[in-house]
Image 1 (cartoon, rainbow, N blue to C red):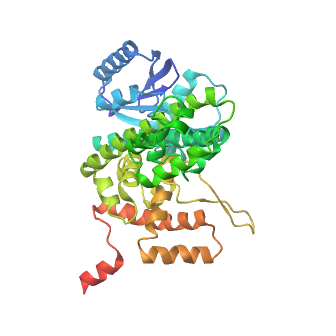
Image 2 (cartoon, one colour; image 1 turned 180 degrees about the horizontal axis):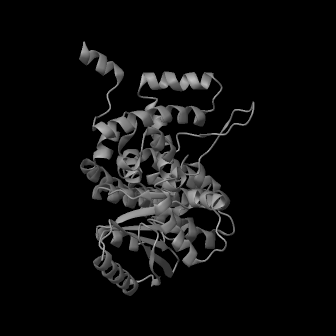
Length: 404
């Protein structure tokens, strides 16, 4: 039997079952079958692929939607086998289906559509954009991605809890909240969690107060002054324990977040992307770790414009006739964009040229976020060049002084 250069596999991903179509580069459909999302189903999947590969030869290329989503852990197992893995971009696939509509829609038809995309991507740029090959990502960046996403989720949870804590304190005991400007101050949280009964804080001795971590004589005097006129609402008996519980959870989150940040700081020394991005003034450990985790590898991007689009620093042209405008792209990594916005805002305060560029955009009538994105768009060019050539960031003044 004649050997082929490639065995193509298309997987339509579902929650519990996946539809699989296997074909050849000439369009011949070899097999179609259902795959259960479980270890037994995965074993059967690879047994079938191995049997077909032995019969027809060639390397294996697998296309599936939902990479790093519902497809897990099948996508990881596919890459561990050494197969080429392609992600089917759902947004671009929807646009592609508008141009090349099918007569009907089923999971089996969608699986066959993946095989069609393999053929069409060689001739149509739009089909090439629908199938995006997954590049190998360094393990340290994979770890940073999970750590920073975990940290971001815990930071968001802490923000929600602090907002609820302040609202409950304002309703139950506004005078207690008034002794601090921020309810998530460490000494204030230690005070709230000293006991299970919130109302007992009004009767606590000064010596006991001063023994609480973070409370010195200054804050001790403020607390004693509050005790003289302390008052609680009628619902303090059942809302008070909720306040104490939230305060304890916030303290726990603070400790966990610090642990994650320490892990990121240690890990980013092994990450080339994190190390290079961290050399940019203002980006610091957290933003550099987040960007390294979300970017993964610079080989994913064709050029700096593609990177800028992914980081949310570039808009798409949206013009018609005399109207000239732009619109936000949908292919943006929200986590990377948030990290980039925070880092660029800090960066402009450290680098005079960036501050001048930001002020120039503001003078042109741009709002704060628009000016930050404009500066971020310029920094995307810098970051892309840095990562491509493995060079750390150097301000222009240093380069001029070095050349002189």
